[in-house]
Length: 426
Image (cartoon, rainbow, N blue to C red; front, side, top):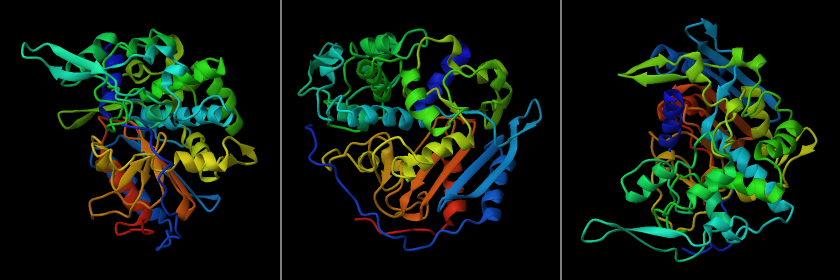
């Protein structure tokens, strides 16, 4: 269990009123043309390995409908002296979340729910939520009734008020005690356990990264009548040809898994093969919506290219164009000023399971990127983004824990150039 707890703990650390019509932002033509410099990106990947931030790295970039870059450096498995290759399978952790969001929005397109419906309309365990309200004079935790129901929109933009692991309040303690992401329980039980935990704040009041995407997965099961993994496989993975992407990987693929590397006392230490495959969910009841998928560069690139194609890839339509636009539009009302660590991602808002860039980089230290891009990353430092202004998608793979944002900063600078600012924002 040590490996499982470590993996889940790292994943966690990675870690109102219904709003008016979604806030939009301009998708203008790029002020600078992005031309991929293979030598610059190769050097960046190699430097990550040379300075000890990664054991192995790889990246795949598509632009204007064609592959413009693939590169890899270092080892997928240092102990086995196995180089990082294109077909390496990596744990993508929270890059699972956008896949879950696409699944739920397919059901929205089918008319199965409305975004501002109360979550309890479909998952009744959330009907009478309580909110942590501090301690009384004797030090006892106090709660109050939620001022309004949690909406489906809330669970898609991280404004429901849920926790996501240990933390400083009794509500966090209650979350840990409930253990809603225990690998031995199904999603329905995970949802019931979570509903017993007080919210950290009133629904819609703050942005706080949370277990909400696992609630999305439970909602997919309820609305579709299918097991979550089965629904995703039939409606996203198989239609897109993502043959190597799964929660449960067959034995034949295990030799292609990249090892996980954990930084201890300033140095990366490779986990054992058993630890590295803890989140290969073959023997677990839980199929989470917020983490757990393992994938390859080419597979995840197909998912990203579908999004860039406004819901379609190679003649296969997964979502309507307008639905992708909705997901990639900032959903946070300006009154939601408490946003935890989201501002550390740059000049961004948050859509449905993506961060959304609203303005050009505001400082030399901020990650390079184009206004209108949307992206997310994973606890093991993986990253992807979709850049409509430059007709570009990028997928970056590495297996480094804890999450190291410097890898993303350097990779983005290598893709765009260190001084890139791109199109103006609103």
